Length: 351
Image (cartoon, rainbow, N blue to C red):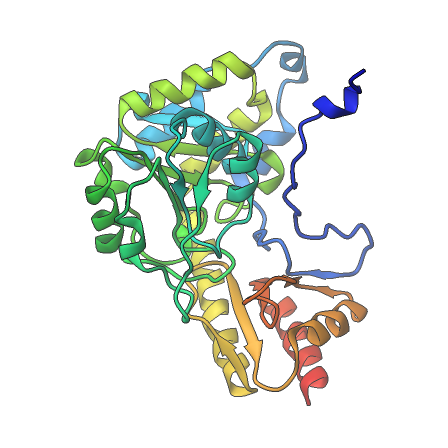
């Protein structure tokens, strides 16, 4: 007699960064933006008509998708909105990766990719990044059922020039190439311009990093109309009302304030460059970041020791207990005040 436990889908889940509930901490472990959303977002949030919460939200998210289309200079039909970029990426895996040929993504990248591949039964192959943690574009010139490239990559913070991304897309026009641009607003050129030339590229973005709205769970994809139509078809077959009404309204307002958006990202970039120099001055190897975080390793002190000592002082950074990563820490760029305190404690640890 069979047991119901035999029919449970077994997965190795994604492990997010620690979310400490205590107060008086410096949280540099989950790449959130240290600054608040655009001022108009807070003003509008206070005036949301709560009576509208009894109604279902627009399943097509037309208010927000139209504003994103305007912002990026594309047609409404080229935009898909989901509940954070994780939702958009998961829907994309489910929609586009349905062959028996393995999909490709780097062995060191966003660790949710391998989770979705396992969850949806998608065969995958993970070409190893090079010794300097950059990808070898020649690894993506082989037969595949799809490709996923995070650019800039996580947790390494490295950026791949658009001309290299185009070579991958051009060489693989028989499969969908997803470019995960969660951190593109902190440096580098977007591959968005390629969507008019190639019908097999999908660009995925998030509001969680540069727009300071991780708690609202807003992500989106831009691509040709056929790709977006296919994504919407899968979404409507799974869950029609995924994006809640406050997220639609407040996300739309966030996109409108370009000046605040630029000022905030510029501030983070400036802090990132300053702290990069200070870390190198005290013996850290710091990869050249195009993100809102730093990937660092000290020449003498093990990463695990630094991680544990920082935590004792209520400073949280990310440690990965994995091959090739276990002597590195990923450090989110916080406010100048937070980073100054981080550096003060860090110097005491390594000296």
